[in-house]
Image 1 (tube, rainbow, N blue to C red):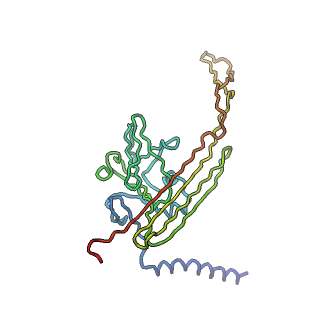
Image 2: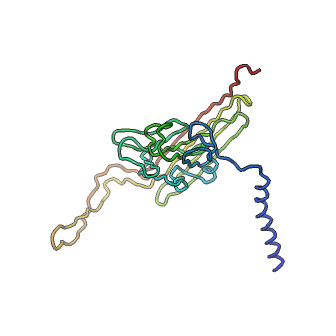
Image 3: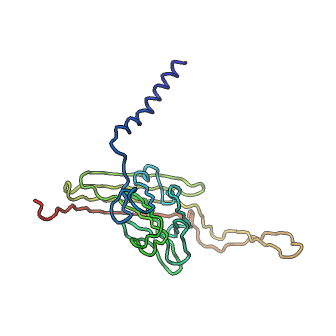
Amino acid sequence: MTRINIWRCVLLSMLAAAPIAAAADSDSLEEIVVTAQKREQKLQDVPISVSAVSGDALDSSGTHDFRDVLLSIPGLSYSGTEPGQSNYSIRGVSTGASSPTTGLYLDDVSVLTIATNFSGTQDLPLFDLERIEVLKGPQGTLYGGSAMGGAIKYVTRQPDLNSFEVRAAGGVATTDGGAISYNGESVLNAPLIDGKVAMRIGVMYRDDGGYIDYIPNAQGVWLNRSATVPPAPYTPQPFASDGVIDEKDANTTRNTAARLGLKVALEPKGRP
């Protein structure tokens, strides 16, 4: 028994030392590059507070939507009741007016929804992303007036000029008392001319199963409370809802997304 324990300790020590040796042989650590200031910079060189989550981290963790990322980003909060009516605030800066205080951008293109009585934002799918950047503090100079509290930036993966790649992913989930949820996505990266022209195309579909049923003429309960003193005996009174909709799992949501990108590397003038 003692011999077995000794060999087990030796084996565990070798396995624990292997990653350390591999890390020691590496020349440098992987650097995070962001575009918070409209140009590529190392994260530690950006003179503002920025939190970044890489696309590989999103893929490996099975992140469903941006709300799954909230707990890993300090200073960012969320409120909302249904898709398309999300409201984000950074460092507590928020407003009830029609103009949001947190900008939402997809590759530097604003996707905010601004209306008279609504200040929510779109719920973008986490699909084929290079990273997510959260810029904290006023960003009016580079991102406009709707970024008074900060900005959330989705950066998509760009076509690769030199490598052929196929990505695919899928998932299935169940809801107690509700419908089955499932999702699938696929991305193709193909160089058309090596080192010069590449194309990237992808599609995604997600079905989030509902759990609310509409029952026509359902019998409810009217809370009949007495205002007399002493109060009269409590007698609930059932009543019909007068509903005519008959639908099971009515709050099911479906999202479809597609993306097509083309990248061309131009040679400078005068180069043979």
